Image (tube, rainbow, N blue to C red; front, side, top):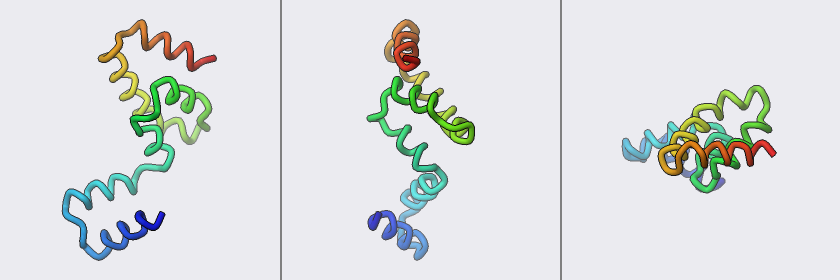
Amino acid sequence: MEAWKAKREAFNEGKLSPAEAKRFIKQERESFLEREVKNSAVTYTDAVRIHNLATPEEKPLLNRLLRVKRANQLKRYGAGEVERKEAEAAK
């Protein structure tokens, strides 16, 4: 948390490079939930489970991330594997 506070202060004081500032602004706009689901350690199966448990207010935040993870899975493993993972997540 301290690192985040220091980054915010650096941003407010104009001490971040343009690339760092852009990255910081983007992260500021994302919710904690979005950042965590976007994390590569969260598998597609886990992302589907999280989406299924999400509140109606949270689901719109997760829809885009879930579509991106699904598209990546389709490219990497094909439709059969994606359908198997979706069925597994539904359990």
